[in-house]
Image (cartoon, rainbow, N blue to C red; front, side, top):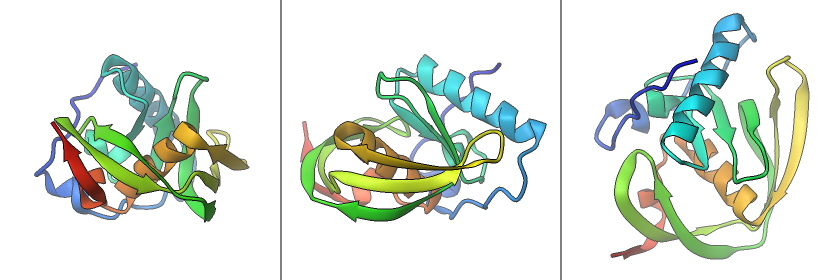
Length: 149
């Protein structure tokens, strides 16, 4: 597919609420492929559509266990609390400590338009929360308790 340029901090699209996807089309399937290609090329663990300049509620996540694609994802429950280090492909070279839930349950659609429900723990839960935040215009720096040099 295609590798896109990742939008950097300061671009207003990163602060906008992304638009829901009303219908799965070939363009949405292509967007999923392009997000994955871009994420892997940048050696990231996740990527949201706004990070490549597209205001749609679409994310991909791969923490080394295979790719997860979610359209219109929503966190329906969260529990626990853990602080860990995060970075972001849209804010290269900056890392910080962020509190996140240790477990989340997320619902969304797969590329066939079927509803899926994922319960994630640890790093997978953190990555999902980070990418879903992007869909609401929230960056990890908004939640940082301490920046790391």
